[in-house]
Structures are given as structure tokens and as C-alpha cells.
Length: 447
Image (cartoon, rainbow, N blue to C red; front, top):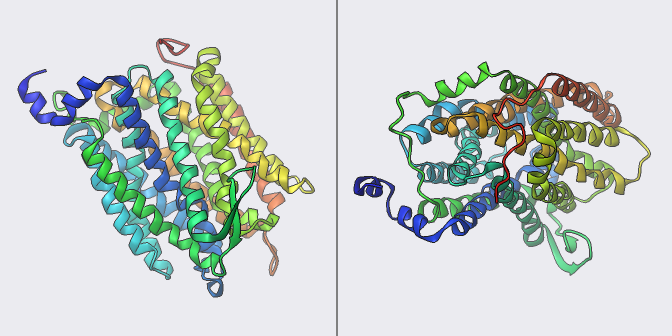
């Protein structure tokens, strides 16, 4: 490497070259931990504090308003990501520095959001936050892929720490802010106490907690992440334009189509579950810890993902993920089942996310050229973080109103069965139309 190239990369290049792959893996794993801790600190509680009555300390928003905030508003960042994050990181700025700047701005917006109570203010700030946060999801993936040799084997081991970060953020916030007189218990989250008197009003403070994590993550990006420079030497200046040409590949087109449907029902999970669990009888302080059951299974599945890909290949593993969505929602729609089974069925979430979305990220990385990795991830992100949430928000709001009789409560049985039906159709479309187009039908698993 020339002296000029080393100067462009900065001192972290020398550190990376001297320390070896174990240190790189550790740094990327900590990046994923912080990336998803920022998200997991507030998202599992969002629809609950939005839906709660104002006299309880909530925002008192309607089903339609919540759908807009967690669906349409949140998706704008994903739609704009290829033109903002993908282009800048692939062509002009070092990925880790650009990631840090986005996190700082996002944290500031979260602090502003936490002090707002009107829907127009929330809508505007939610759009702004999505624009700066959603691209960080693809950038962290792209940065990780840029520093590993075997994505099928190494990425699941790194991405698993994102799940752990999500779990840790939800647990810690509940322990330190929503409960008191904590005591040990054998089952997760291992510590449990009594709700504080204003527990519902305190849920919105999860945004402030998330902002603190974002600022710490930004400092980590600037100081310790491996240098990831743009690909200036490539001949095509518009990285996102080249990435969009992936749609000429039939497998990518089918993947995007089915991902759009899966992302839609995936978003409904985050909108309705925080309200569904209190309907089942859970306390407000139990919502986030209960939802982490899904993340525990995700850890197990991420650990097994490399083996599954080696044995079954992309198509069958992603099909398993589709079926897991169908099964979970079918269970939730079946009235009369024990509450423990309803909550415990979240174990399927690990199959849902790891087998479908994590594998999809790996597949996109394998079929994209090296100089547009960030943009390829963000183009795919338009569907799963852009189009899916938009449709999920509208679908959740429309079905919520449709299955709520005048003066009554939402019929969750009909609601979840409808979502399960979408999962069934999507599973059929995927398994019938998707064909693996990577050069090696079984991903390499070199040691």
C-alpha cells in the first residue's frame, strides 16, 4: 500500500494491518452491539407509549397516526438511503466517519422527540430521524462485509452481537427506569421488580436512553472502527445507479418482491405486539423483556446460520424464515391458547429474522460488485426498511380499525389470522419462484 493511500486511511489502517482478524471481528461485533442497542432501546415500547392515554402519561395517538409514525414516516429514510448513505459512503466519505455523523444527528433528534406531545411535531421529527438513522443499518452491514473474507461464515457471528445489543438495551432500561426493588429470578430477564408508579409515562424516556447509546456509538465510530474508505477508483460515479441494476437478476427481483411482503408483516409485529401483550395481561414493564424472547432465539439461529446455509442453501433457509412468520401469527390468532404459549411462540422470531433477513443480506452481498456493496444493501433496504414499513403501517392501521367494533376493542384473533394469511401466500410465491443465482450454489465455508 502506498504512503499516500495510508495517509488517506489514517492511523487505523496500520492498527488493522498489525492486529489481525480477531481484533477486527471484535470491533465489528461491538459495532453491531451498539447499532442494534440504539434501535432496541425504544422501538419495542414505541407503540405502547404512543397509544397510551394522555392521563396515563402516553401520547394518545390513534391507530392511523401510529401507523404513519412507525410506518410511512420511518420509511422515508430507507427510501432516501441509496441517494444519501450509499452514494456518500461508496464514493466520497469513509463509512465509519459518515456513520458517526449520522448517529450524532439522530441522537439530537431523539432528545427533541422525547419532549414533544403533538402529532404534527412527532411526524416531522420522525421523518427527520428516519432519514439519518435508517441508512446506518445498511452502512453497518456494508462496513462489516468490507472487512470479512467469508460472509456466509463470519457475518452471522458478527451480526449476532446486534441481537445481544437489542436485548441488553431493553433489559437495562426496564431495570433502571421502570422498576424498583429488583430481585433475581431463574427465567429471563433474570431480574424483576415492582413497577414505578408512573411507569407508562416513563416509557417515552426510552428515546433519551437510545440517544445516549447513539452518542457513545458515534464516538466509537470516530475512534475505533476500522477505516473503510470510498471506492474512488471505480469508473462509475453513481454507485446507487449501478446497484439498482441488480433488478435485472431474476433472483434479486423475486427476493425484493417477497421481502416487501415479509417486511410488511414484520413491521406489523412491532406496531401491534406492544399493545397485544398488555391485552394478554402483561405489565408495561414486562413488554420489552418479553419481546426479547424472540431475540434469544435469534442468537441461536444466527449461531447455526452458517451450518444451515452450508447444508440447505439460500432458498430453503429463507423459505424456513417465511414459514416461521406464518406459524407465529397463526398461533397468536388462535384464541384460547395459554398466555405462556402466546408469549413463548416469539421463539419463532429467531427463525423469522435470521433465516430470512440475515440470509438475504448475505445473498445481496454475494451478488453485488465490491464497489457498490453499501449501495446494494441500501437498495435492498428500500424494500425492507422503506416499502415494507409504509405498507405495514397502513395495513396495521386499516386492519386495526376494521377489526375494532364501534365502542369495542380490537379483535386480535381476526387481525393475526389475516397477517398469517399474507405470510402463507408469500411463502408459496418465494419457494416457487426463487432460484439461487450465485456462482456456488452452496456458500463456501472455509475455515
